[in-house]
Image (cartoon, rainbow, N blue to C red):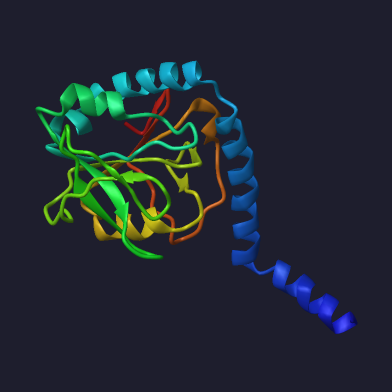
Length: 201
């Protein structure tokens, strides 16, 4: 029993175990805050973020923009798509396997189907072209533009494949921290947009 206790203590001190637990604690806290937001709060704050994105040079210059379908009170970018769908090509993520995510073109009027995690996805073929801008959701960000996602690693793996794309994190003000726990494998953003701030832009 003593050896087992010592082993557990040693395991808990491992850097990546400690990092994972720090992230999990912050993920639980910020996810809960987001889930208790009212529908009106989500709508109002999302519109403020959309207005800030629309004024970004990174967005104005982008021809192909990846967004996401919001769940659990995430920042809703659908109004951005509605405003600019005739000017830009918009893409949405689709989960194709346990560890892989691809991106597909969103075409206005074409129905979406629920994917692996119940999130609506386009039925168009996988996008093979370049992506100029990736508007990235997250559970938490910090003022150095680092990000914590939901924990599956889908976005980090995907973002590594599109290193040349500009990456902008979007979140509510309470999701922006001075500093968050991070590892070498976490992909930073170029900037982070909240309803009241534009960090790094």
